[in-house]
Image (cartoon, rainbow, N blue to C red; front, side):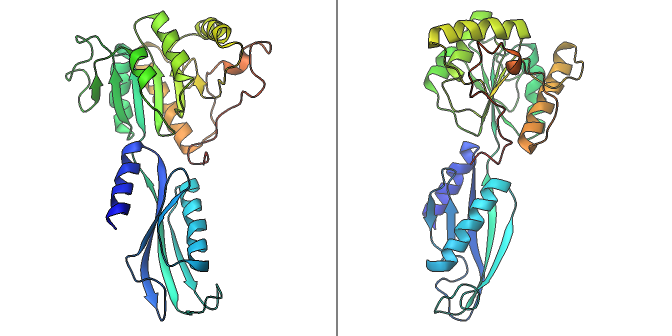
Length: 282
């Protein structure tokens, strides 16, 4: 039980999605008692047991569904009649997704990041602000956020990112933006947003691709960031970005401003495609 509790806390801290099954009721002869648990890690491996055999296979299938859809389920099975198990009792198992708040990394503590941080926290993102400028990256400007006083490229080079991580690059320097995007492409973050114009994206991608030898996966790159709301000024731009993040989290089809699909064919890799909605990447 302790191992599963610690694993649940680890999943919650990672911002990824797993699933937890708990035996809530039994009748007759069963291989486990109420309270028995099984956890499905984000990578698909399992921890714990609800009794083995056909019931455990059915629970594993339900766990995979919960991880994919984010929906709860009460699995009720007669072990003998439904599953052909010799013990012949009945088990009710509650299956639920386990998912921590996704982490939004703001690389740059300027005006857009300042406006974006509060809105993102309001829709349950765990906001991390990365900027080595102490006068900008302050508690007063970013309350309730994790502030990291480091260069964006330095942190990107060392930090590990996964499906629970969303990155927005908006530093004070175009060269730093370029380096940050180049490093972000080497990570496994769910989303990589770059604040800037289409022309800026095309120039940066051309230079990064030249250094990489022509192979880039731009599927997760959003530039210009946000939805086309006609946004003007940092606060409206922040609204458009948060709207994009929410749409992607909920798997809704909306019109993004991302210009990756407009990069000439000779520059765009053949495998480049739109990313799947959150919750369908497993």
